[in-house]
Image 1: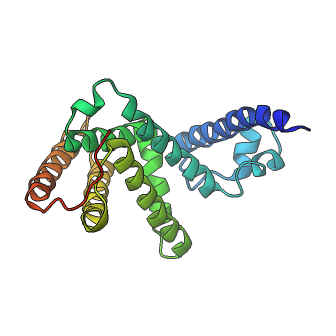
Image 2: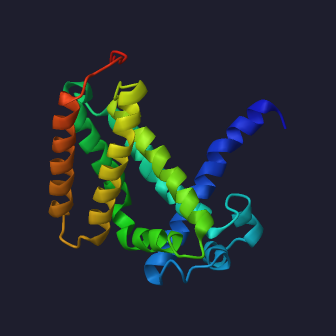
Length: 209
């Protein structure tokens, strides 16, 4: 198989991986996430376990693929018309909302996935969750085109991470349609962070495009 043939296979493999994730989510909606096994997914799709293993070594990798969909939606929100006419606070708000809304169709399963990760005997998944959170926050900064570097960036990142995690916690527990409480919480804390940032010496920054 030549290099071109390998390139052609990549989109096909991505579609197959998406089908596996969709099948897992469908089963999770019928049962619970904990009750879904890889062999259930294989049976549901009419394939063998080897077909699942080619894409995912375990169920948590399927959960990670679900969260990557939210990351992809987040990365794409920078294509929104008039994006650069918004303030950084508005762009960050939109980025966080986009990430959460991508998960909204399977919110109950998302809650179960995250609850599974933080069980005491899943230390490795907790560490993976910290890494994932850091990566997602980095994508938020990139999508919002936050230009800070140096000490200012080092201070901004934990603040944004705290705001993101606080918003996520509110979103996970809110049952009101449209999650108005969560969006109010996000707006308040981003506004406070923006006010503090304006008082902080700007230092060296790179100009935004």
